[in-house]
Image 1 (cartoon, rainbow, N blue to C red):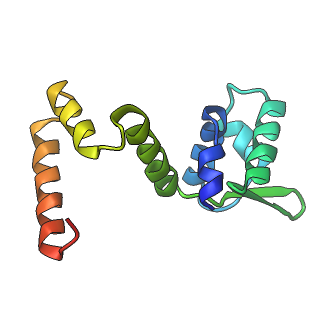
Image 2 (cartoon, helix red, strand yellow; image 1 turned 135 degrees about the vertical axis):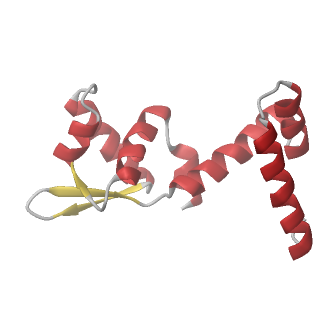
Length: 126
């Protein structure tokens, strides 16, 4: 499924957000309602593309139902890796340093990061 993450466009991401928020497979009508500002034909096209890329699946019942095949977390990890590679030459440390230097992290964020890093050190993962 790794290939699907890299192929999802920003417009398709909006459809994926609706699929992730659903309590199960959603019909085209339900997806269109959630994306009321978009043209219905556009939503159908985006869904077709997501299915072709392996990011979503379509199931025929009385009508078609759609569900995500790529999780929000998997897409987040993929996009974070790409961002770090592109902007920080693959250095997560440089990215965090940039966030700190530009006051993008609150004191609570920094405290939570310290706790996370300390727990990884104790587990041998850091």
